[in-house]
Length: 286
Image 1 (spheres, one colour):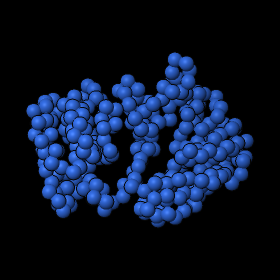
Image 2: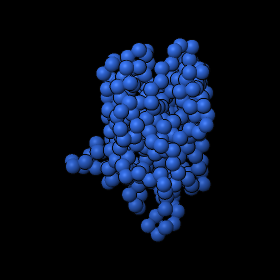
Image 3: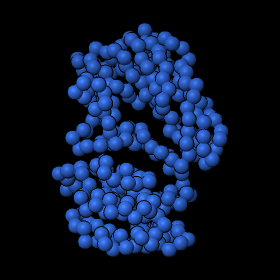
Image 4: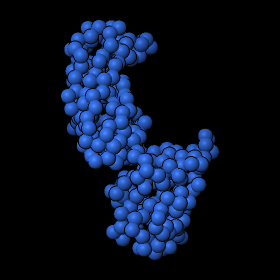
């Protein structure tokens, strides 16, 4: 089913449809605005045409100007706007994001993608996905999630230059969660040991949901410039509304290594810091 067909099937009210604007023309703008005036909520689907491999190459990551204009004009109506991004790469949405109440990244979802999106929008499914990449704010600021400090320094040598649209691992749901009591089993580890990380996750909302607990590790000092942080462990958990869960994740110390200047994978002794949400804990490898 298409997104429109799935929305119409799920909705108990009247669903209005407009093709909107194309990828390069704005000839559907007036019709879209007219129908949006009658709606309680406006769902805007943005993105690109389906494509694969070399034929799908594009010259710019910017959304078509016609799509940006469509959302801009719709926002002037004062109606709640939900944006569904149907695309196979992170296209620039910095002008659209402030105008939307929520954004769903659908990628290229396949034949049942419309039905999946509809179930999320109507609350049958509580989304819990996390971004597997750093979503850029500008097409000229493409950096990996584990970027090095030197890759994003501003003119004053601070880190304010790293300002992506959304960081690697970001993702919201209808539930909200808070983290507390982050701890490691001990403060010092040797090669071959296992790092035991414990953290409490509380569902602070009235909606049951799933959360991906992400463990990032920062190598304080290394023989080559280390990444700011790397994802070293994760687990998806289910937490009832208002309940708390204690999560324990094990990370082998051997996985904290990197490929050095001699193209050899090594684990170097030194100080490390792990982070979960806004919590941090320090440990050392001897």
